[in-house]
Length: 136
Image (cartoon, rainbow, N blue to C red):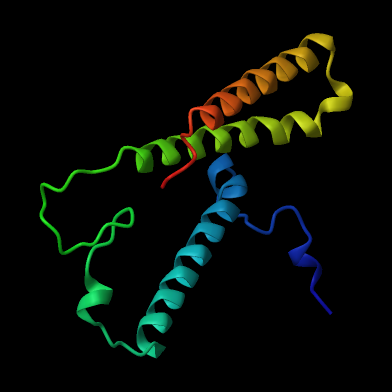
């Protein structure tokens, strides 16, 4: 049986300040998270078999061989795909909260998001037509 002291409001009665009564729980969560992350990293380093190879330790960027000349021409389409990913990721970031409050929105909020979706749809059709999504 759990003692009733755990359910009382004054369990963390260090001082009657707001910091000790309200933020000590957040501080304890941060300490537990840091302790767990250190333990997980240490165990993964200790328990994993370390067999580094030259191929595994070499740098890898955007599908090019890392052993070529440093002045090799770089295709801009890799940057374009990354930027497009960020744009559509931001669209999702705006779309998910909008769907959660869709029933409470007025007409201005509804149609402004429809306008946002329409503009992103036009942009997607444009980049598809010019072939920006084709890497080859």
